[in-house]
Amino acid sequence: MPGQKGRSELRQRFSTLLLVLMGMVGLVLQMPVRNAANRLIGRAAARQKEIAIRLALGASQFPIIPSVTPRTRYARARGGTLGILVAAWTGTLLLRFLPGGITATCVLNTA
Image (cartoon, rainbow, N blue to C red):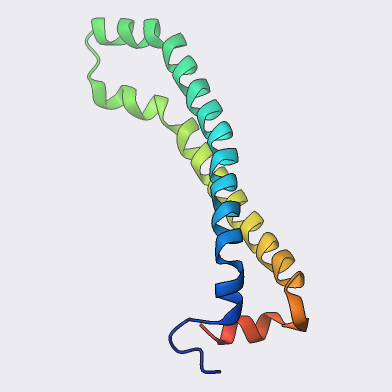
C-alpha cells in the first residue's frame, strides 16, 4: 500500500490506544514539572531578602537577573537532554512490540 498520505492500518488500529497513552504520559509528566517549579519558587523566595538588599543599595536589576537564572538554564538543558535520550530509547523499544513482524525501517519509510 502506498504510504504517501500517512494513512495505514496500524494508525487506524492503534490511534485510540495511543491517544490514551499520550494523555497518561502528559498527566505523569506534570508531577515533576510542578515539583521543579515549586522548588524554583522556594529558592527565589529564600533569596528575596538578598535581592531586596542589593536593590536597596542601588544595584540595577540587570546584574541581579543573571545571578538567579543559571540554575534554571542548567535544569532546562539537563531535562531536554534526558528527554531526547528517553524518547530515542522508548521509540526503539515500542517498535519491537509492533504486531506482525513489522520492522522499524518499514514503519519509518511509509511516512
